[in-house]
Every structure is written in C-alpha cells, then in structure tokens.
Image (cartoon, rainbow, N blue to C red; front, top):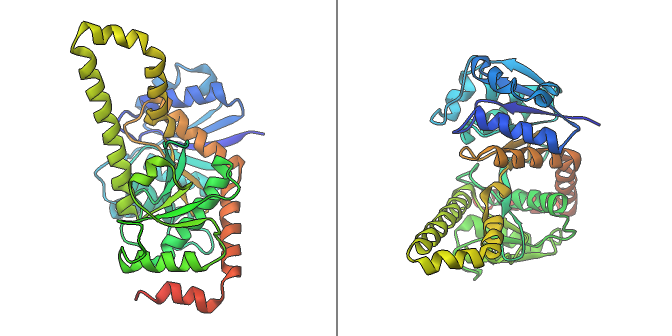
Amino acid sequence: MSIVLAIDGMGGDHAPEMIIEGMAKAVMRFPHIRFELFGDEERISPLLGKHESLVAVTHFHPTTEVITSDAKPTAAIRGFKDSSLRRAILSVREGCASGVVSAGNTGAYMALSRLVLGTLPGIDRPAIGGLMPTFNGPKVMLDMGANVEVSAENLIEFAIMGVAFARVVLGIQDPSVGLLNIGTEELKGNPTIKLAHQALKESAFIPNFKGFIEGDSISQGIVDVTVADGFAGNICLKTAEGTGKLMGHFLREGIKRSLLSKLGVLLAKPAFDYLRDKIDPRHYNGAPFLGLQGVAVKSHGGTDGEGFLQAISVALHMIEKNINASISQEILAFSSSNSTEERTKVKFCAL
C-alpha cells in the first residue's frame, strides 16, 4: 500500500538540491512511497527532471513564497499563504498526504503545524522528540526545543508521548523514563520539575520511572526516555552536536601530526569506520513533532541528501506504526488511571 508524504522543497540550508537528493534515495529504498512536493518551480523542476523514478511518484505543486530561517513564527502564521511549508502542511490536513517533512524554520514549522493540524485530545503542547546516540544504543529525548517554558502537566505529557514513541520506534515494551535535572536528589530543581517528579513518582502509570537524571546520564543511556523542557533539551542537543564536531576536529589534527599517525589510521580504519557510523548525525536525523493530529517531521537544516532520507524514513515509520493512535491511547489510559482531583492538582498546584 502506498504512503504519501508532503515535502517542503525549499526548507533547509542546501535546499532544494539536498531535498531532491534525499527524495531520490527514498524512492530506491521505499518502493511504496509517493510524494506531494511544494516549492519554486524554476529551481526544482530541473533537479526533479534528472530522476525519472522520482518524477514517476511525485506530484509537484509550484509555490511563490519561502519562509526563511530568520522569519518569526508569528509572521509565518499571519503571512506566507503560498509558502512551500504552509502548503505542505495543509496537504496533510486536507488528506492528500499522511505526513509532512521539512528542513525549514523550526519555529515557523511548529507554529504552523500546531495551527493547521491541531493537537491530539489531551495534549496541551506538542514536543519535538528524537533519538540520541548512547552507550546502550539510540534513546529517546524530548522536548528538543519547541517549548521554552513548560508546566508540570506539560512535562508529564512529554513523558507519556516519549514512552509511546519509544515503544513504537525502538520496540521497547516498558521504557524507562528520567527527568533531566541539575542533580538526582529530589530536593534539587525548580518547582515545576519537582511537581512533575512527584506526580510521576506517585502515579503507577509509568512504573519504570527512574526519577531525576543529570546531563551525563543521557550519553550513558541510563534511561530509554529523557524528558526536559525545550530550553534545556535544545541546549543538550546542540552541545552534543558541537562535542561531536570537536572530537572529529581533534582527531583529524592528531592524524596530521606525524607520518606514524597517518600509518596508524590505515591499521585502525575499521575502528574509525565504526566510530564514524555511530556518531554520524545523519543517522539520527528526523525529529517528529509529537502530539499533533498528523505526522510532521523536522529535518536538520544543514543535513545532506542522506540525512534527509533518514528524516523521510522516520516519517514513514511513524505513519506505518500509527504513532498518533499509540499516543492517544497512552494519554487516555493515563487520564483514566488518575482522578480528576489529582489531575487538577498537577495542573494548577504551581500557579
């Protein structure tokens, strides 16, 4: 059965070239995929014409506007009616596509997705989820930047969505959950995270709740799902990306220092190949907006065709596994397992 994805052809630092490259790779890997592509006809048509197999499964829609990386979310909502991003999202709401993928402006993408698609019942705010490399394989982390300020109720929703995502994407039946904090002691942290911790600890809905974890626990893979507000989560993500680049820089500089080092690289090539594969950010590209009534996946703006292929793969997997149904079931089960009085306490205690 075919799955149709809407693609923002103008989003990202290297669009539309890397977009078309990623789509062409996706056609080779996923024969059942179809595309609704939106973008500048003058720039996209010549690129699209180079891939006959891609042309055969793509319905192209010319657009006249592009939401740039420096555009404010409010401006994207009020204007840009014929932008490639807005029209790609609209195609999901109209039922022409089952999901949307964009490497464009994150703030505008989230704002438009929330406005156009709406949130799932029981979800106050969507969150950006994603996979992080760890000692124990890929693990889930959210929120990665959508919500700078959150309530305790939001953090609880993030935990529930993270559990559903880990079950669907990683195949973990009973995912462990940790709240990112400045220490593991219960007395540490701000009132919001303390309240979320208390509620998750006292609730039997997430039996594998591990309490507070610190930043170094993320790379150790101590828990399957790390929950944070968007401010801390985005800093963690960007710090991890920067650390990876720093390690690569020092490694290359070290190799250049002597002939013996260069010879050593040849001997250690299998090890270096293994390292490159494990920390390659393209393999973890594709961050879904969890909690929406529709599948929307954000690709890193600076990725290449291989990375965009991975983002497409994430969107396909979420659609095939019906991630939104899983999240809705988890939210409903949580609501049913807690009294109205308890839920009201979590929602308003911090006010």
